[in-house]
Image 1: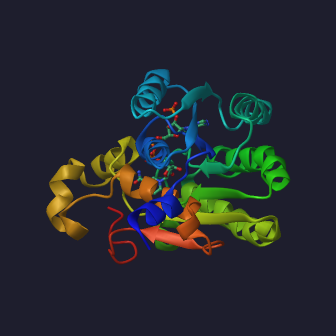
Image 2: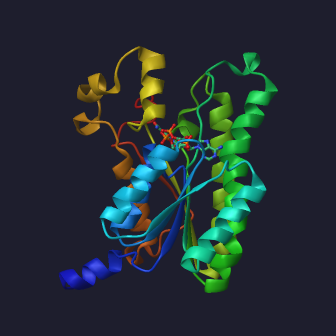
Length: 266
Ligand code: NDP
């Protein structure tokens, strides 16, 4: 196979992606990687408009197309608006990355109020559900699509004090696995990407709260002497959407540099 043929199999030219929380952290790495592979990207952000503008400008600087749209993903009507605006602007939606998420307070289950569990479920599970339901009819109609769910290694580490987060991500994974089976006849691939610790605001805060240190100070103890970066997750997303990722669906892909379960989570 020539290099040109190889590049074509990895290309996302002509495809349209929505990335929730695509303005910063892991989502920004995903937005940039999908755009680099040729996709047009809709960046869904909640509050940080400046970050959304920055990523949009970076993508346009690559000669690719991007727009930033504001929505809280727990607002079902707003999510439907974003799906409609995406189709109005780009004519279709091919790729959805359910990435947006929040951390939890870190108390034991006994001491955690029910409303904290509801909050985490609202964002991680229902936010992803709203977006998935909003884009699926478009993907089915066009006979092709990719949906990625960003989960976490925490669903197998199940660390004490992480109850609401683990529960919400486990629910997310359950939805994704059923969806993968339901949609395979519609040529829609569904995968779960489960990172260990990633160097983002959420990751940095987690390290600070648990060991009182800067994440960079931990590099010598990490696989490959570095922390996982948003681009590591973005590159995997782009591959899974490409022709070369064509037979991968219904899986959880752990991205932890090979660190054994739980050890990477400080
Ligand atoms: P960050 O805190 O750095 O960024 C969170 C992103 O989610 C922001 O773009 C934020 O938008 C968006 N967001 C949060 N709540 C909402 C909402 N209600 N509606 C719309 N957007 C929302 O987190 P990360 O980038 O680290 O995390 C991204 C995903 O990866 C999350 O699902 C997280 O659980 C998961 N993850 C993270 C790991 C890590 O170590 N960092 C490890 C494993 C998984 P805005 O900026 O506008 O507020």
